[in-house]
Length: 110
Image (cartoon, rainbow, N blue to C red):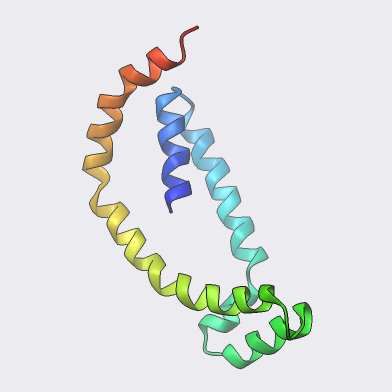
C-alpha cells in the first residue's frame, strides 16, 4: 500500500494526470492478481499444497521457499490493517500534500 500511496503522491506533486496514474496502477494491480494466483490457494486453506509447491520449485534447503510460504502467511494478515490505516488517513494526506506542494516546486527548480 505504501507504494500505491507514493505513486499518487508523486503524481499529485508533479501535477501528473490522475486518470493516467489510476489506469497504470489498475493495470499493475491486475497483473499482480493474476501473476500471484497460486497464493489464492494458500489463502483458501491449502497451505500444505503451497508448502509442497514452494519446496518442489525452490528446493528443501532454499530460503526462497521459506520466504514464499512464511512471507505470505505474515503479509496477508497485515495488509487489511495497512488498508484501514490508509483509508483513515486520507484527510491527513490531502492536507500534507497541499502543504508540501510549494516545497516540491522549489526542489524542481534549477
